[in-house]
Image 1 (cartoon, one colour):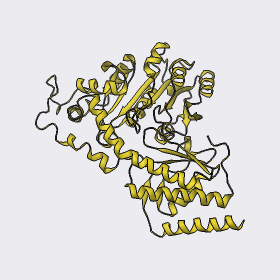
Image 2: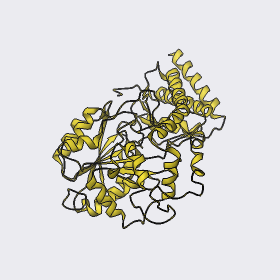
Image 3: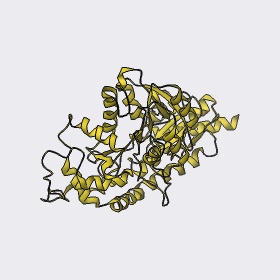
Image 4: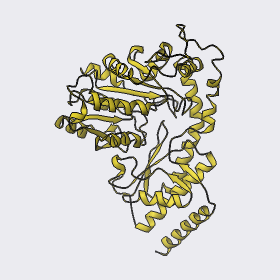
Length: 419
């Protein structure tokens, strides 16, 4: 008992010493750091005075609602679709996803008989998941159903059971590669089961492949093509695939895209014609000139990985050192993406986030990775290593680890059944 008391006093002393530094460290969102943004400075002047597309289109003018042909050629392999199965749009894939849900609510979707709003609408939400997906549903009045995640992707037995039994379930959110926040890559079996499972005829998979090219390892895992699997299963309209260059070029001035069957793309293109005369074609042309082809994008992403990997390694190193022997937390070791997911002992996440905040480290709110901000076990914390300078990231991770240890000491908590 005396030893435990001494150890607790030592932890508290370390925490108080760091707290006295009055730090202001932010690990809330997966923002690229300055060094990453600098990789794309060539975008700013790559056009010069040559603003015409390959077919002679003046990119300063209206038109081209689904994107420049050469932009579609460039980003079709990015989404693993054909050039006639993609729309290249503005800078935000989240805007495209929000828009797709809103259109379905108001107008319905191909294969459906009525707008979603004419009946109850529910979405399946594998969790821990992406808080902004859940915010779209909550904002638009779509009921969310929490589904667990496994090491291979979402719990497919639960998803199949729910989707088959309830025709008001119209969609599911998926970040299939380096999932936010767990880093999971969906297995081939999960992809196949999503493609062929029984569901409402107007059911849609919102396949947010945000981290498709964001690898941290030399031999990255391969994600099976869901559109091809849906087509083979006789459900070609089931999936909408989203992506962007937000963490490839400029976070606020990149390009977003949506892919799917020709019927889905025709539907979206027609609906978009009432919203806009066309996207920023100058920005599309800049990206085409700057990257050239998928090889150019891959070269760019290798530079990103060289910046990011030391940050992820630093977090793992400190968590291993401070928490590895304690059994008080478990964390992901992603092969790509932007996040590390930490599971504390049950009932501790909110207290850990609050304690870290007192010491000057701002973390994503506990519960944010679940629908309605409610983690039923109050254990999941998402951290984003990309933005802080490496020295600050080390300090922030040390504070996080100390907070886990101190909260556990205060509550007598232990990890129970952490996945």
